[in-house]
Structures are given as C-alpha cells and as structure tokens.
Image (cartoon, rainbow, N blue to C red; front, side, top):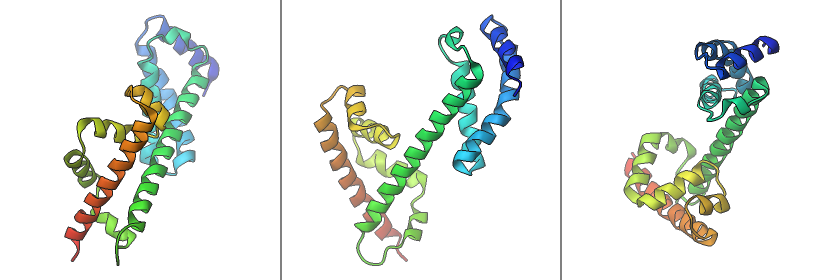
Length: 182
C-alpha cells in the first residue's frame, strides 16, 4: 500500500468526499485479505474479516480521530481475526466436551450431522431469551466479567447460568445425535 496516497484518500474522506472511501476499500481490501489469510488459512474468513475491518472504519462515529488509517485498519483486522480464532477455539472445546460426555460409540464425524442450522434451532428451542444472550456473548468470546457488565447481572450468576445452559444443551445434543443414529 502506498501510505502517502492512502493518507491523502483518508483526509479527503474525513473532509466529506465519500467516493474517497471506495478507493480506500479497493486499495486496502486485497492487502487486508492477504494479512487475514495468514491468520486463518481460510479465504472466506479472511475476506469476511477484511471487509468487516473496512466497514467498521466506514461506520466509525468520529473518523477524524483516526490519525493513521493504515495502522488503524491492520489493528481492526487483527482484532477481528483474534475474535474469530477465539470463537472457533471455544466452539471446538464445547464440541470436544460434548463428545467426551457422549455414551458409547459416538465418533467426531457424527457431528457432521449437527450443522449450524440444527445448533441454532436447538439453542432457540432450549434457551430463554436471556439465556440465548448469555450463550451468544459466551460464544463470541466474552468472559463472565464482561458478560455480567453487558447484561447488568452478578458475575457468579453468569457463571452459574452458563453452567446450566451448557448442561441442558449437551443433553439436547445427545438426544439429537441419538435420533440421527442409523
């Protein structure tokens, strides 16, 4: 990326020239995709994170506060990559925890039957709205402390609710997988 050209485009955008952001997008997106690809080794995730970084920049409430647009974009992209990796890691731990608690002959490949749509349906059917909020924040990588602040509840209450939610979801997943046995 030509840092000086990028800086000029950013100054034009902050000054009110909306078309300048289109040029920023065209210039930065391929570089950000390449950067994110180094984190994921997955083109779709890399494209999503790079686009999200650019959209967060476009939607920034005070763009004039962003002094170094190039550094800003890479920082936002890095944070989005870290969040995605954290979420993927938590999902893997949850599925691993579920598989350890399953009786008998369940194998990891059985989870191929448990696609995102079925997981979403199970969560909606099993959890109350407040519980869905807690679980979503947990899945997004937020700590108990962060969840308690966002939802204005006691941190210990959050931990207890997450434990109950996890137990109920594991039971529901076990029943679902048992119903899928051939």
